[in-house]
Amino acid sequence: MTKRTLIAALVVALLVGYTATGALAETAADSKQVAMDTGWVLLAGVLVMFMQAGFAMLTAGFSRSKNACNMLMKNLMDFCFGTIAFWAIGFGLMFGAGNLLFGTSGFFLQDTGNTFASLDWSIVPLECKYFFQLVFCATAATIVAGSMAERTKFSAYIFYSIAITAIIYPIVGHWVWGGGWLAKIGMWDFAGSTVVHSTGGWLALSGAVMLGPRSGKYNRDGTSNAFPGHSIPLAALGTFILWFGWFGFNPGSTMALVPEIAHIAATTNIAGAAGGIAAMITAWWWFKKPDVSMALNGVLGGLVGVTASCAFVSIGSAIWIGIVAGILVVLSVIFFDQVLNIDDPVGAIAVHAVCGTWGTFALGLFAQDKFAPGTTGNGLFFGGGWKLLGAQCLGIVSVFAWAMATGFLLFWMIKHLVGLRVSREEELRGLDIDEHGMEAYYGFQIFTTE
Image (cartoon, rainbow, N blue to C red; front, side, top):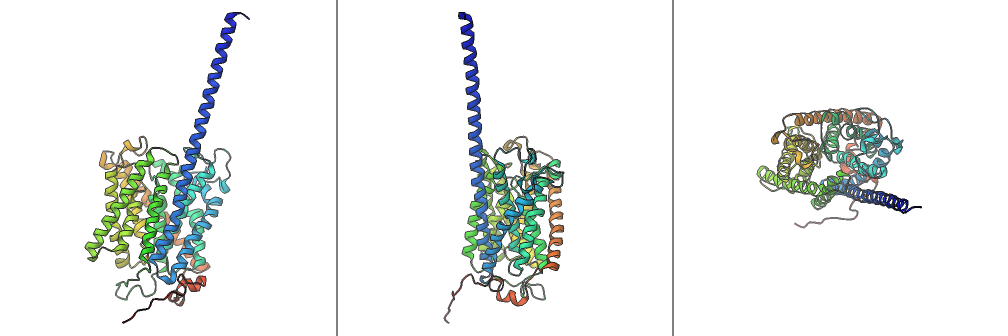
């Protein structure tokens, strides 16, 4: 072998070695990114799953003590039944390959390689994607428990919880997040003001209407009687847990460990704070007292309101979104209760349906392209014109129509199959004893002296 040949061989060997080393380094970097993203998405999913505890405390606290066990059981079973129903049917309907209305493949998490192409933008494993989307699905289902509290048969609740997690919610999710028709026309909903909250809220409205009010809630002249919740401390604890979980709900929707989660966390937090302040001031003006329950729901309303746009708006815009949401919570609670005589013990319709609608609409007003270039573009207030706002409005109306129609049909079917409402006697005794055979506070008595 000549010297020239030897030198050429050495150069080739070095180049091959360098290329191989670079490929290995790139593979290692990719593997590390997948691991970090997976860890973040799982952590965010656990935070959202913990929101079930928040809903349990909130709804139990806003209910009377004789129905506390019933509310806890409903929140528990939402997640239990929802986990299986979403795995078997819902995830495929929502993200499986299909048409513009619903997925037609991917049931039982079966993936042929391109079944879940709508989620290919995230590099985390399929099971991680399923778990993260599951906890959102369970949130939509549990919203309904609040508006139907204190008079719904537990067996009926199981039926509609399964239907919501298996069919009704996933189809809405497919329209927006699964490559469906609303996504095609340019509607955006980053973490679910409409997909999760409005869907759950409008179903809550249809359920409350079908059930009718609790016994003694309204007088013949249409005036309402207050049925105070038995534990405002529990409701406050639930609110703080939900606020905490929202930092998985919104930042986790990146489904990647990226710097943008800091901005999303900031807009989320400040909207919730602004909502609580605005609701407190509004209630103080209306009722002459800073009502605690209204302030708690105001925080939740602000969080719901910014959920659609948290990645696309400035912190200043998030404050305005929260302020309007907090005012809307108070006014809509009064409207549904005193004007329409729709009995919603926890204010679920106001918080989730109304503020979810506002949040989706607000995205069309406040979005700025600089926060997520190449996505929403600018909203109306930042020179973007009417196109984005129009798509948002069409999404709002479509989801409202779907949720109300399927909700009334579902509750009508349940009413005629197993019955929807407990008897008046059971309602007066409390659902804890008649439905579950136990009390939340067994042996606890309050004695008063004159």
